[in-house]
Image (cartoon, rainbow, N blue to C red; front, side, top):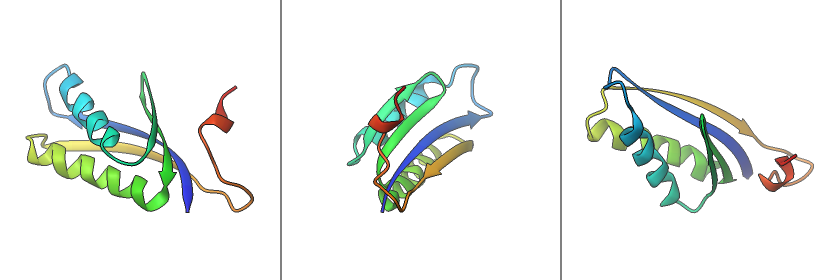
Length: 92
């Protein structure tokens, strides 16, 4: 099933800057078979629903393994039964 999503990963309890953790999360997403659009507060994602959910899991597992103690993620998912959702169709 195709889906679009918005993912925001927030490392908590880190230094003031979380740039490296966010950069790592985006790098992990780029390594997957997904269409991505990063923006100031998160990343828009297009792909198979299972792949999107697996990518979120991978981000959490990897950042924890690399030292992040606490992660808070906001995920918004859209699936449709009438047509295939795409990021291109969302642009104004």
